[in-house]
Length: 225
Image (cartoon, rainbow, N blue to C red; front, side, top):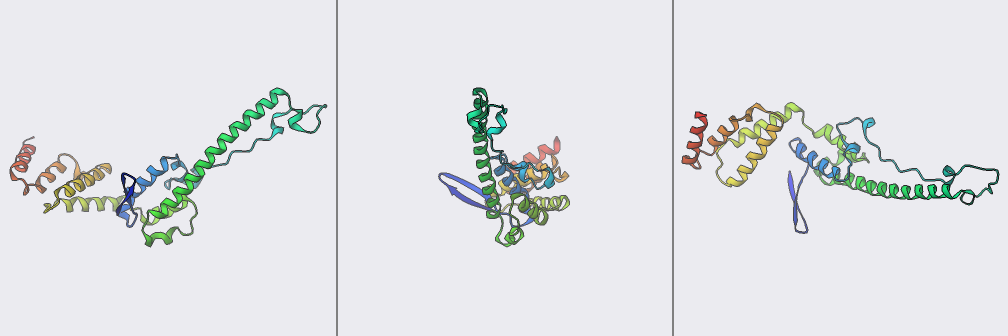
């Protein structure tokens, strides 16, 4: 199920995961969202948890890591450092600060993405993820319950395709948009029902009653090819 949101001057379409038929489009949009912050390798529900990239906080820098003790040391590491040691320590501190800033940004993005999952599923499915705190766990749970098998997906697409072969009675633009959308999805899974030129023939037959001259000519040309 698709809904629209207004974001300034931009209208965004959001797919709400309500039924298995929504899964492919919904998970595509979630992947698209996760990829903006390079998160997909951390949440991909197709992977085992052990294969996921981990978001780990960078280790803090300690002065002792950059100083070689001597007999003259006073016990105050920063004071006992040579100039070269202190410079290396300062550089390590700067690197750590930058890494920590990147980690903080990514952690926030991951938290936001986790919440996004809950906001883009049907209310009746909220109970499925109530005990899951991570984005990966939520996606894994939703995939288990709402992702159709390959066979089920093919049957759904075939049913949609055959339904569209009925002559459109009104709102031709919407019908054409849906036709193109379904055909592309069928092609993506290599369904023979839409193998060219079969899909073109079915399309011409579907619109034959709308423009007999144009459709009949196109149909005859296809038969002659």
